[in-house]
Amino acid sequence: MLFENKVVIVTGSSAGIGKATALAFAREGATVITNSRSECTVSEEIEALGGCSVFVKADVSTEQGAKTLVERAVECFGKIDIVANIAGIVPEGSVETCDEDEWDRVMQINAKSVYLMSHYSIPYLRQTKGCIVNITSTVAIKGVANRASYSASKGAVLSLSRSMAIEYVKEGIRVNCVCPGTVLSPSFEKRVMNTQEPEKAMENYISRQPMGRLGKPEEIAQAVLFAANPEVGFMTGANIIVDGAMTV
Image (cartoon, rainbow, N blue to C red; front, side):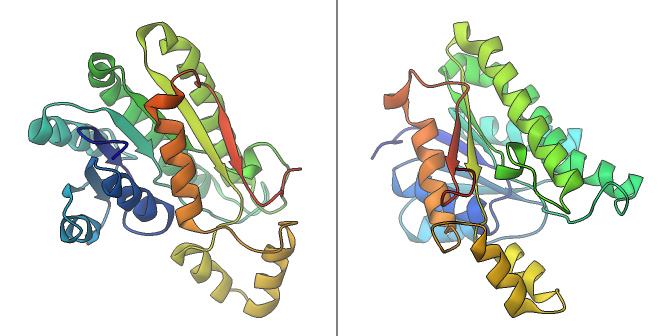
């Protein structure tokens, strides 16, 4: 039980990578605070497995939402050991087709949420010598067409994470990233089905990974657990790439 007695917040844990991560932490003994902007059942699933979990409905892209989530975690369990910032959206569009409102929305959900959750959780992570794991993306290190706002937001998360890693290294707080390639999640499947030619779109997505398949949420979740593993305490400021060789 690698994370026994650890209290973990997982944002965006209603589905996909977030849900897989919450379940993976629970299976390793962690107490998990799950989160979504809408109702979700992952905490119930964790309890059905014999784990301990509390769900907090909150929009972590807002100051009040992030503050509420952190305060609720401390209120329930007295501490925070790990924060996994996984909440995010994947919009399409170039700088020409993306309007200002959409740009601001993407930056708020994908990047500002990481800032806000870090801002409110670091005082508690300082007490536990805890860690933060942020989700970046291959678009943060490789140019991908039709992903302007998403690329900018994930590039911001990567740079912010490295800044925080060096900022807090002397205080024992580690900050690492996990960098997924294309992952087969409910939101991804929805995007594919909304295209004019779903079958062709799926083929195109798969072809981007030299491995010849899409990633699984559970594979990304295991990378998050590795990044948070106290037995790898020498690692901070890292960006762990799990992308089927997309960026090789």
